[in-house]
Image (tube, rainbow, N blue to C red):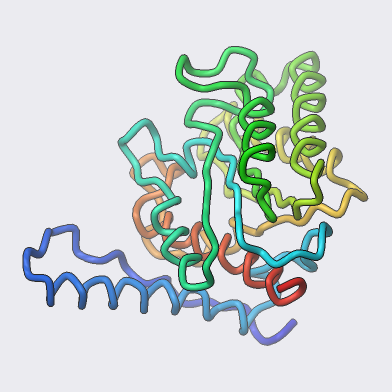
Length: 253
């Protein structure tokens, strides 16, 4: 432990009102970056906000990050914010590019994803072939029908395939520890999904980003449903991911 766990609230989101003045816009952007930087500063005060150790992988510098996610990353079909604009803003000063695949309403084992989405394994295989990311983050908590043992077998096989693809060229692979839905059966299904993920990644050098730690300390993190992320929750999710990226950069460059 590098100090007592952080207990304060996260910065509140910037005003949603548009500003036409270039000066005012620049100042607003500066304030937003300052707020996000304050979140990232938490990493020096508590070891529990980052993985115990970086994921294993190749020794090349971190320049490309791939995020595969569900609606906590993509937003709920346009009704809640996406994480990628915020995360890319945090990564850009280090010269790191971000790509994002997956999609709301999907998970790694979905055989019939939403009409515009390919299977996660197919999306990731294409991404590995085209951009060869140095770091792959798999954020997935949705598991409808997760109490069915047959679905659990399918999920295990699909998640194993996804990790195999993610590690196929030496990328450092991460999964995410989530907060839980407020209602059943979604809460139990999320528990099962993360249990299976943990079993699949055991002894494979995959690290876990403790998003739950960040959201427990994030002011006004959720929408009225209490599960999907509001603007400040997205800021905290981006900060959690960025903290893991920086930890990996400290290890490999």
